[in-house]
Amino acid sequence: MQCNRWVILGGSFLAYLFDALEILLLSLALPAIRLELGISVTQAGLLATATLLGIGVSSVVAGYVADNFGRKTALVGSLATFGLLTASLYFVPNFEVFLVLRFLAGLGLGGVWGVVSAYVVETWPNESRGRAAAFVLSSFPIGGAVAAVLSGFLLPDWRFMFLVTGSSVIVPLLIVVVFFEESPVWADHRASRTDSDKRVSVVYILNGPLRRTTILGTAMAGLALTGFWGASTWLPTYLTTERGLDKASVGTFIAVLNLGMFIGYNVFGVIADRLGRRTAILMSLLGVTVTLPVYAVTSHQTALLWLGPAFAFFAAFFGLFGSYLGELFPTRARATGAGFCFNLGRGISAFAPFALAGLASSIGFSGGLIVCAVFFGLSSIVTLLLPRTGYAEPEPATRAEANTSS
Image (cartoon, rainbow, N blue to C red; front, side, top):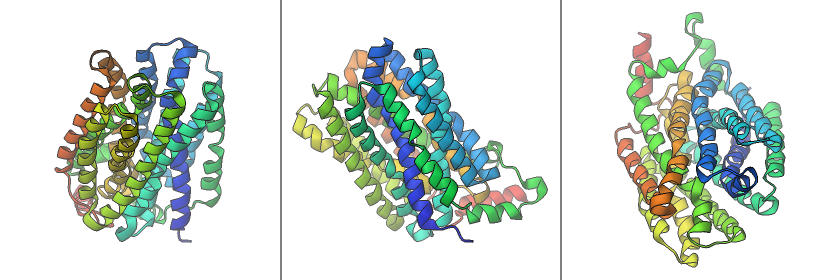
């Protein structure tokens, strides 16, 4: 039976929406968490860092499961892991336990991105794959908007908020379990392997011709995500402390910002299919490099309201990495390769919230945002060193696999 690509599209959109919701709620809840647990700004930054470190470790774990035991198995495991551990934050007694639970939840949160990206690459044709992947991953800003709305209703009761959102992951989990079929591309490729060639690990993408692609892909993602997480984690705090917005206004600003990001994801998805994935990523990275510093130095609240969506519109690289990184690696190592680059990149970016908290004491959060823009510019330079893609099995990865086998 052929895998229904529309079911995969809708189900993956919902799965990643909940993934984004659980990640972004933390930044909105940090002020309330700090107040109840009596922790410093630095300790609060470590909570975000622990989450991203867990996501970085997932680059090895989830990719291994997806490439060796199936996309569906990996997606179910990822959803169940972060849903259960997020809900358990309701009972957290202190900062130390909170830190451990966020790290463990990161193992599940990181797995979703790589699996849904592989599903889309393997179920949608080349000519519409960029739009399909961008649409699925555009659920990230929608998750952010939902997080902003929920935080407005439920904060400062952050415990109940995490209990509700963690428990609600049962919705996408049931959809995947009941309606998702295994990727036919993965299943066919798995069946064609010899017994001695069944298992795929991260060693495969770090040796031979795939090594350069893996290193550059990780550097591209790591630099871009350092800028993104550094900026997004403390953006609500920046708006509150340096621009004088109240909590209700911050929720509105973040919701509008995420609307701009949703539009940007889907516009750049079309650009990716027409001009190429790499070109679209370059346009996106250069756009945020220019607009974020302008946003950081703007003090007028009306201007902030409009410039936020403009900056977020160009932050579409987050949605473009799915199809691009997936096409850089062959079927047998697609989830491992794409997931390793993206999630190790997120792991590398784990110290960005912590570092920005330290910078804020000397140059302010606005200065920290400008530093984040530099990382976006560096990522665009690395992107130029990677190949263009657009093939069902990209030429560089296919040749690499052939050379490895011979």
